[in-house]
Image (cartoon, rainbow, N blue to C red):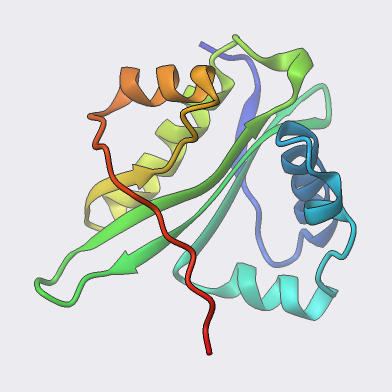
Length: 151
């Protein structure tokens, strides 16, 4: 497994949150989305204070080298929740070291502690490493994803 240390980002760690966004931007090769127009400090603190949003980072030698962010989705049909892994990325120099798996396991521990019955994640078919990782850890479902503009 990995030698990176995994920790949850709290509302007092705005700099860590911004570094997390930078790691995600590089990981997805989309720096503009993640770092071009970052939210203000008050927004970040409010988001991190939420009891339904979770951000964890992996650190190695003092640098953030991996990140996972997701949400608890409280269900309406039963008293339970699901956890959605929204984003997960590891710096290219630290891949294939178990960091992504470690981040998912740490996220899973939080989910378990909060009584979630399942975690889920989406992956693009054009990203074979992500698909392989998730197939190793869970069961694949072939579904369609639709973006619908709110009007």
